[in-house]
Length: 576
Image (cartoon, rainbow, N blue to C red):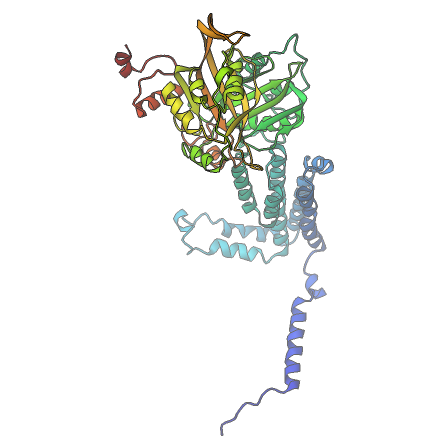
């Protein structure tokens, strides 16, 4: 007879649920006292201490990384020594138990020297894994390994905290959380954050954030004495950034620069952040971290051109290495106060992605043309007397006139070299530069100078780009003009408005470098290049200036001079 199973009654269901609940309760209940007796009280206490004691230090670094008390405690070796002491105590207790040596002998199966190297990774040899698994059956060994892991995690976390505080690395809290939770992936995460934020990898040498060296000690240097007599920004720039004989192979020193700064100095590193670094202490931390990175990778700063000036000056530069290669290029503007102390700096490094003419097309698309057409310059023409006067004349007086390009071209030397570092190659010769300016002569776009140095022979100045659109962000930048004065007859307008020819010196622009800021800070390609080639911070060495000039002449089928003034061999005959 076939039997049919009847549905479970309500009572059966209640009994099943009760059995499941009882099973779960037994599973989740604390161990029986008889089981707990198998563990030494000292080992149990050590396990708990190894687990919870480091969390106090982790939470302090994560929640209040810059708190003075946290800096005092975590800046010492106390947290690591406490974690290491707990581990030492576990070893001491464990090795004094019966059978400890037999347990330690199991390491022989883990580190089996008879296993051939080619068998390590094929997954067929299980002896080391089984040996370690058998050791984990011993609570003393489990506690030892747990304390071991947590002590090293704390050591690495503290090292990350020290480096991040000194170099102002962002997202420290996230990296510390990952490291506390799972160890090495947190360290990898920190390295990625360092690269993507433009800070570069932490120093790999013995010098670190917790130590000091003769070239970069952590103590804020005292402020230097005021200048004797009138300030001389040009001489100060040369002394601070081109002093290899004094400052060593880097040619500059964070201590020397900050000693020459005023207390309220503002430092705009527009390859680092849109916000200025304010105050001597903050500027010193920024420069000292940069100095350590450059010393670690063997990089140095090479000053290319420097301009004169009493109240403000500037210089162009590139990074280099012991092989003399040309790396990342940039320009720095420096302004001083009446005491000759640095009160303002703007520095920008070139973008590694070169949009070229795409920049002009983008600006033309977003700029708002003025309602009325521009008027001609007319009687507003005058003869500038110096490099800084020429910059002010072109960009504060002539810009916006209908005949701006023609008037500007009058002051360009025939063999001018114009480096707009949004382009791969410079523009060479007055005709080439004039075509470049024509592309960027965009209705509604205004080039707004901000601070202009007062140099006679050259001029460095900061600027912003106004697109004529209300509320639109302004792109900042810095430019460097080098000029020469040519004796001859120049136009001079008298008080009666009559223009006459008089003897004098005509100022001609021979060299220009423009660098706009990147919209992303730090620029991703710069961060990547810094990881690959930290000395140059470019993916490969760049062309020297005279090589770039020759390449530009070749590409544009022009006969022009190199930056040294020598004709290219192919052009001597045609120019002769």
